[in-house]
Image (cartoon, helix red, strand yellow):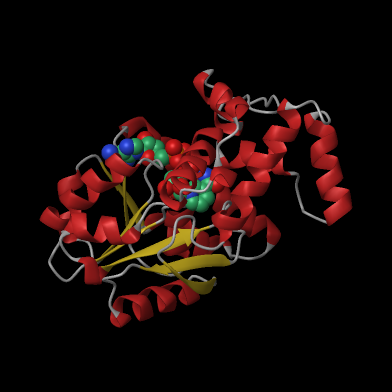
Length: 271
Ligand SMILES: NC(=O)c1ccc[n+]([C@@H]2O[C@H](COP(=O)([O-])OP(=O)(O)OC[C@H]3O[C@@H](n4cnc5c(N)ncnc54)[C@H](O)[C@@H]3O)[C@@H](O)[C@H]2O)c1
């Protein structure tokens, strides 16, 4: 997701500093971004010169301390509460005091992240969809402490990226995942109970409800670890049994079957 957000930000004309805890991932991300631009050039949605200029706007860094120089942060680390809280505490310490901190979280409380950063009025959700260069929606989430100015800034930036921003309150899963994840999780229950094969479940949803892809293929694309984390957060924070993650989903994650990114999830992929 971080690579996709970097791509659309650079395309919008902003300088981007990309950071990851694992330096090797930065090289992979850059290669992915270049491939993404190449595809856009082929499709005609970007000229070769625009693509080259945009790629040149992206720098990578191995040091979080370099965030001291940035004007805006968009965080997209793994969907783990403790990890994000630690990082927002660090942003609060490292970044200039007036810098807005946005999170691409799918489900974690924005208010909690704002408090961890010590600047709740400058923290909001900016939830991009996967794949970022293709999907138009950005959910912009207002934490309890988020200021109107922060919301206006992020809605405006999403517009400039060519996205459609939709405002949501700070409730677990916001709009999209509150509604989408129960469907994905239910598809895993249907598989676990032997209602149908993975292929049949996906075909039924594609041809029966006009979804562009089935829920199990979608889960593989999102990453089963991310799906599980979101379901756990919905279950815990909303306190409703209907969000209970399917044990089969948990088992797949335990086996390292995380979907496309590991080559195996509900389907097998050649990476
Ligand atoms: N996958 C999706 O379809 C999707 C869609 C919308 C939003 N999101 C959200 O985007 C975020 C990232 O999702 P993803 O699927 O790209 O996850 P991912 O697990 O594939 O990638 C997360 C990246 O974070 C890096 N990371 C881990 N700890 C770090 C740290 N301390 N400092 C810096 N980098 C660190 C990892 O090395 C990895 O490259 C999550 O919050 C997720 O909920 C995901």
